[in-house]
Image (tube, rainbow, N blue to C red; front, side, top):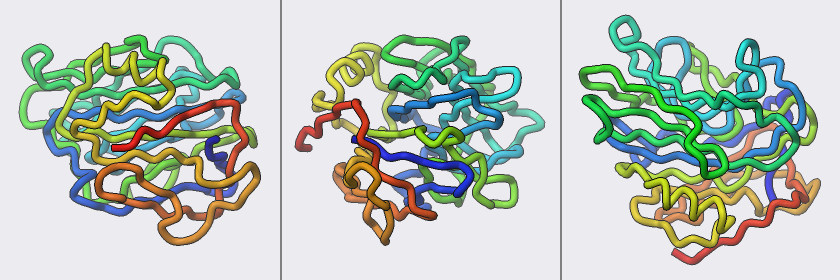
Length: 250
């Protein structure tokens, strides 16, 4: 099971601007399963916190334009003049209608200042070096699944242009860069992995039956330790996906 998003309806899920989601300058690992069934004409956000346009942010999105159909992980400090955006982008397209697993890792122990890594389906696909100096991605903006925010703080870059674009099992680990072995285990086990150290939140996105309207305050459940539930806007729907995920007790 998964959740279907339609960009034209501005469908998304908000989780609030909570301290648990503030990544600051530390290590992090964010991940999400996605299925995208056609060529994107604009960027489609899977999971994000912060703002675009030279503001603090972290996010994973499906790209358009010159990088059409390729997934990118992004980090940015708001001092864009001296600290350019950090981007790790898959060189290969995955807008093929199949399920894929995207993982963004910030590892401050790599190199002089750390690096951002992107894994797709358990394989390292791209890295980018983090610039020198304090590189803080915190921003007083809510965590969202299915959209980003622009420089004015308005939701944009919504996910799902094709009517069957789905997301599932989003996880946020704070203060830890997961290893290659852990990422492979999560991918191949389809959720039954028990990797919970430093797990802040996990959203299976499987609470609703196929075609069921996702609506109501706090209905998108967090199976992590703090139950940081989310609230949908503009009614995404449950998806009867072939992706089978299992939830292991924490």
